[in-house]
Amino acid sequence: MGAVVEPFRRPTHHDLTISVATREEMEFIDLTPALVALVESLGVRDGVVTVQTRHTTTGVMINEHEPLLLNDLKSMFERLVPAGPYEHDDFGRRTVNLTTDERINGHAHCRAALLRTSESVPIVDGALTLGRWQRVFLVEFDGPRRREISVALGATRRI
View 1 (cartoon, helix red, strand yellow):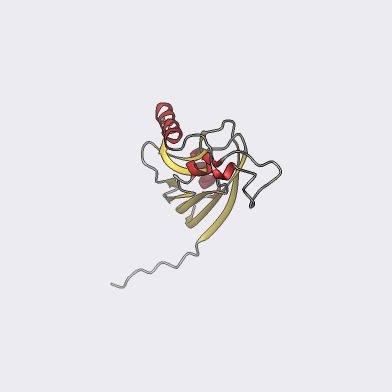
View 2: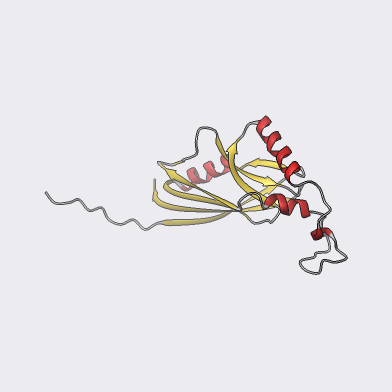
């Protein structure tokens, strides 16, 4: 009996952007429904999705979407990184990366440093392989603002 050799299927790659308008200074935005919709609309059966924030005062995390837990996480960030003063916010001394609408946000940068800038989730049989309670969140630390999230889908098999 000879081995059955399947032809190599060239991987497909998609680069997309999700735009989010945050409403609060600190906010947990569940990106999971948008990611599921992208996987379905592109017909991705197997691959990986990578979500990356393009902002230094936001982070990406996977955790449970449970309101009391999100309150606990908010309290934790506030305890670990309280409001200023921060050298970053001393515009009399700071000389780089200043804009005309610069914000007092040293605490937001420090809070974001506790999280990752990206997360990757495998896609198997057309579904994100998240655990029962896992969700993918953008975490805002300097809102309200408009945010851009990069989404890269690497598909090894399509429907």
